[in-house]
Every structure is written in structure tokens, then in C-alpha cells.
Image 1 (cartoon, helix red, strand yellow):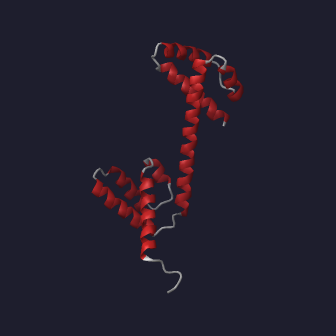
Image 2 (tube, one colour):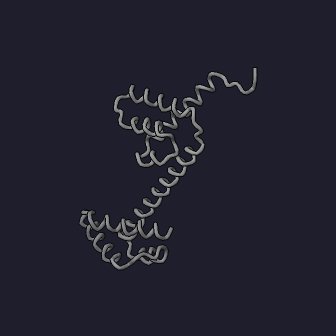
Image 3 (cartoon, one colour):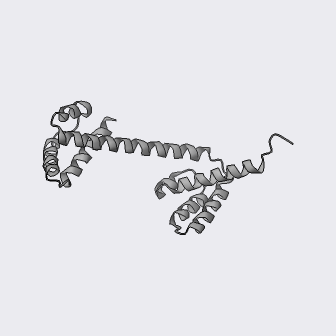
Length: 161
């Protein structure tokens, strides 16, 4: 036998991997799917997959997506997918950092100097928002100013990065 021939098991594994990639792409929002370098029929099949509710129909559509993707060179799509995942991970990291800073700023007045030194935020209404967020936190009311403080902190962190 030639070395280039693949066993039936290898072919099935590759087909399953491509199908799994298609389902993974289907987990993305529609605008990100349309931005991927896939043919239009593959994008349509993936978006259609998102709208299916029944499991057996989802399975069949996943198999169809796998069939479409099997004939394509997916290296570019995999790179784009990895970039999207890394951007999402970075976004989540920044959001967690902002939540941590919000708790520090509410609980400790000394943390404000550290935050200002590290991120050089626009402090025009930062002090007032922190003060109001502390009052809300003491009243167990965490609402408007609590969210506004988070937004201000997140903007400052994003500007510094």
C-alpha cells in the first residue's frame, strides 16, 4: 500500500474534527461568522444551524456543515477563529480586572491613588462616582453609580492598554 492512503478510521476522525470546527464556529455571533473567510454556502449553513432547536435536526445540520467544510482549506479560518478567541479572552481578562478595581476603590480610599498612578484616568467625575458607589454599596443597593464606576474603570484600563 502507498503511504499517502489514509485508513478509514483516520478519514472518519478528520471528518469529525471538521464537523466539530463547524459547530464551534456556530457558537460565534452572526456578525463574526460573516466576517470569516468562508464561502457563502458554509456561512449560511452555520447560521441556519444556530436557529435549529431539535437535537436530531442539529446533528444532521452539523453533518452537512462538516461535508461543506471538508472540501475547503481551513487554515485561514482556524487562524481567524484563534484571533477571535484571543480577543474574547483579553476582553474577559480586562472585565475581571475592572471588577477587581471597582471593589478595591469602593472598599479602600487608598486604592484611588494606586489606580490613578497605574492608569491615569479622567478624574473629573471619578471621585464623585466612587463616593456615590460607596453609598450604594453600604445601602446594599448597587445600581447606577456601581455600574458607572465599572464603566469608567474599564475605559481607563482599555485606554492604558
